[in-house]
Image (cartoon, rainbow, N blue to C red; front, side):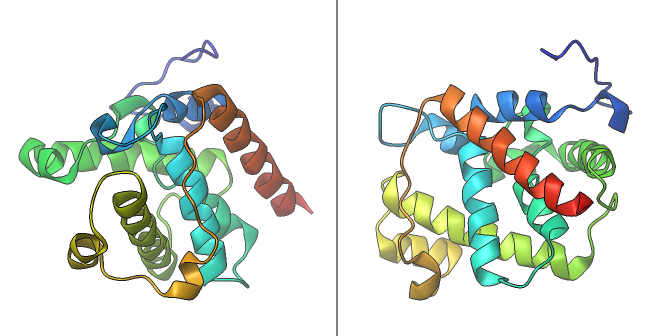
Length: 189
């Protein structure tokens, strides 16, 4: 990692994980395999910020630690990349197992349980689906009808004011680190 840490992908440990490495990696990993409109790729870091915002909107009284979990929901992709669902299925269970091991180490590093409670994980997944719908319609060239079929139609109140703006990776990286620090500070209060 750029921090100088070495991360064993098969046996990751929390002490080898730094948020700056996560933010950097995710800011340079393109979602949708880079097949989006705009002058910048839509990064996993930008997606993670959006998912955390949607999660907060749909769960307004949720604890800060679960918002942190939402921000970190795709953190393993900083080292294993973002594969589209058909490729993940073709690769087989090994990808999912590696993702789970890295996620557990990330969670522990930042004071979360290794495995999130099922209701929290389900709520984050719901926010992730809303994000996917927005991404599909706003930057990936899908019609609303296509996106509705694939991801389900989000409630209008959740979508209100959400607009995807593509930004340079360095800006997204800084925003990811800043949001992480804000949420972490709320855990220690």
